[in-house]
Image (cartoon, rainbow, N blue to C red; front, side, top):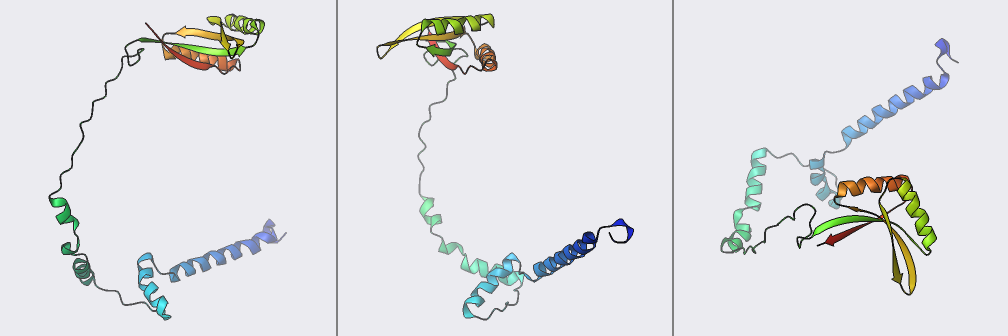
Length: 183
């Protein structure tokens, strides 16, 4: 410990960082600005790094008008007599809420699971009924094998379906959303 209770490393570290920062600021003052780099690059190829004297703003504007004159661009003449054909766009027609494109009513169902045995499907159905959900079990033959699917719903709108989906997520069940058109 040095005098006054300040550790010795602070007395060494603080001046070192300060001198490094001042040196960095000095280095930045010697680096040319972005527009000065363009002046240095041609001189670097000749091997003599010299800065040219800055030109007055008036001479710069005259030079740019001469090199970028309107006569050098051809698009003025090319585009003068061109026509752009805009195709006819069919306007978007939204479908009423709860209906598909054909005007049929839509209901939503959630498939909570698919099982090889009726007992497993009934077990999940009982668990879902205890949690206050409307469930059904339907069988499906796929590749000669019978699967028992557990459905939750039907729901007339997405908000009710989302609430049921949240309940299933709390039970660690990831349901599959089914959208069905009814007549």
